[in-house]
Image (cartoon, rainbow, N blue to C red; front, side):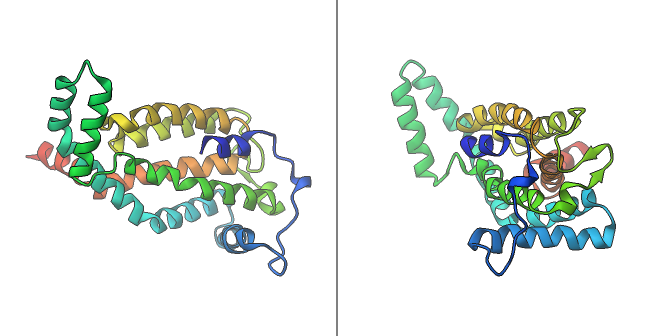
Length: 238
């Protein structure tokens, strides 16, 4: 994932190296992923008059599309939370034997059919979406040259507001998703915001904007459908 993200952020956007997509000659990826996303953005722009809002609409539709993965992550998060007492006992028992600690922890996961990395799925699945978004922006001059608020959507945010927001919302999303409760995924919740911040410095603003929208939508989604946070909210009102 890191390698692909660095490929996206490795150079400043240059629209001259991209050609508009022709559906008649496009390959599988362009025809079934990039072109439909491009058409969605253009059509929504015609209705709303803003590519910034068009990206918001596309984000909501994409997040709804991957909702099954999100629900799977939530199920995994609840299972991991339920195993915390047993995991703590294992850590205390084998605190001086890291190899045995890892073996017993994996046995515990297998016994309860829990995948400790399932919590990363909603974030990892966004990689091909990011690539499709990037190519949709770069091959559509209307999007590339469009403005939204203070930004040129085809260029990096000159005031670094979006990179900061992208990093902060990535971190907050990890907390809301309960990744801090999972030792196997805890490092990911710190590495990912730093990576996103650095890459967003050279990302087209439209791409960073999608990432921020997506993180915010995920947090709102978890607030309303996450059992863990519903329980906290109900307990606070009693």
